[in-house]
Length: 248
Ligand code: G
Ligand code: G
Ligand code: MN
Ligand code: NA
Image (cartoon, rainbow, N blue to C red; front, side):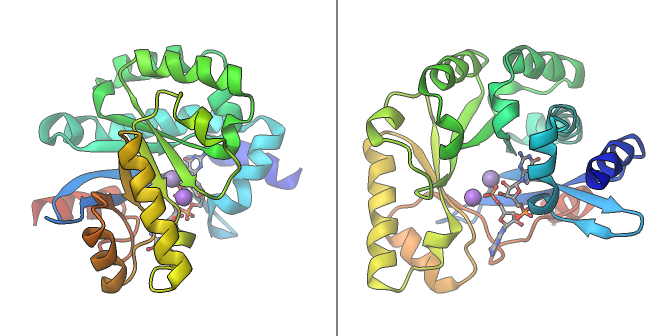
């Protein structure tokens, strides 16, 4: 309850902010876009990870407001960069936010207000979020109509049925970092190869997350994973740091 009150106050007092982690083309290392990652700078508790507060926000329903703020902030901050240079912006949706009835209208409205090109937007949803298959399919269709891309985040860690995944209008699979970390073991190699092949067969782009080691990068390249993100390239960056990186 305290946490919830603090979040409400925090949003009013502009304590939330976004970092952006670069996503690169693995063969050329060309910058493709970035994933927006939410942070909370609390006046007494310091910087708080979304792992700590998202669950509370989701349970209380505050995520709806916070999610709207996040979408607006990300599209406002990134509108110009993405339009001028063709970068993609990825944002994470939470469960409640995804099933919010008016999400497509909301996204359209924010895009119009901020001048953001929706063709440059990728929405990340997790497998767990697709638990209500009919509703999920309808929402994904409506989002698809807007021209946004949809990415299946944390792929392989949930329980989605493969046959269902192949019927959803998805454009991208993200290989969860727990699999990337297992590259170099027999099982890890097999899992990662399988996910890359699955993506290819379903005609989906594939992005590996949590790439930390050159050996992981080599493996992913060798098996034709197109894109990735991770500390090996760059951590989540402030907007200023991101702009400096792009200039350099
Ligand atoms: O950046 P970090 O590793 O701290 O993120 C932790 C988790 O929080 C990740 O699972 C990430 O997907 C999630 N997350 C980060 N930013 C957002 C956001 O804006 N909205 C939602 N729903 N989840 C986010
Ligand atoms: O679940 P999702 O993919 O949205 O989470 C992204 C999270 O991964 C962010 O919290 C980000 O800080 C974290 N992250 C990004 N790069 C790396 C990395 O190379 N290694 C690890 N361990 N975490 C990373
Ligand atoms: Mn993500
Ligand atoms: Na993930």
